[in-house]
Length: 360
Image (cartoon, rainbow, N blue to C red; front, side):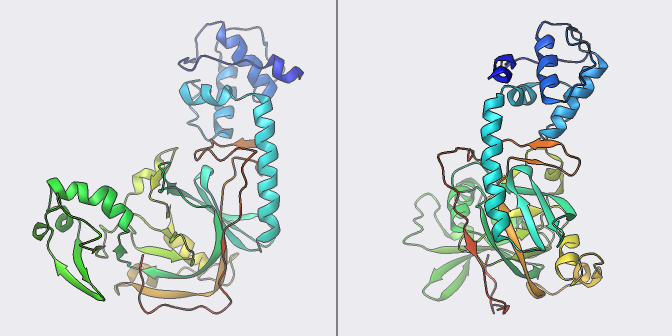
């Protein structure tokens, strides 16, 4: 394959900056000419990192969701070292993903793309009505966000957080061994479980060094409020993985280019805007409900006018509205042509069933 033979790879620790003069810059020019990020009229024999090459690097970085600083550093070099043959496989795999998912999803719907860290509202004409940034699950085993589809049926205002046992065991108990006051500072309440009874207790009453969750089952709940990990809103689409969309008090994390911080659920940068759309029957002209921000009732359930389909997908390449081919890093290492990607669905019927008790 001629294109593969012309493609250059670089040392992993290489860093090329504007105004550098190095032989590696010749190969950088060659690659960016092949990708179309550098205009063909530019002198490809020039080993000076000039402004035209800087603009080409920035364009390449934007297409790969990298910081567009014009510096070919570690992450940019990593993307450049992926060969055209590998990119062809990536494109073929993602075409299959898009085709399979598009055949099953109805319009309009909510689309979350895990590797892109975005949430989009897709209208009836298959165009993006609104988009916001999201935070997805960590790359650690057990904390990644699951690929699935479902229907968002209701949202909860001022939710409490029933902390999953996996987080209690892996994160909170190790903290309590050194700092029993951790729960109080973070507005968390500890309960011992005795059959169907929940008995409130203090962290100091338990020896965390000998604690056995099988013999001493417990539950920890974080109270609603500005400190709550779920923020002011959560959006529920019933599924066996207990994954949902929610607000977060840690807004600064949305500024990070790589946003794999959650335990599997999806944190939404602008949840109140999302709620406005989901509670409106016309996404082209949504009516903002200021009452959501002003609501004081805790754990208040608000059903949607009708269930809204949601797809949590995994797409590492696509062509955007401007016609540019976009690539994203395979954060969960799922781009393997020998793997199957079954669509996990949890699609409730048209009737919205509101539970009497909300558990997270």
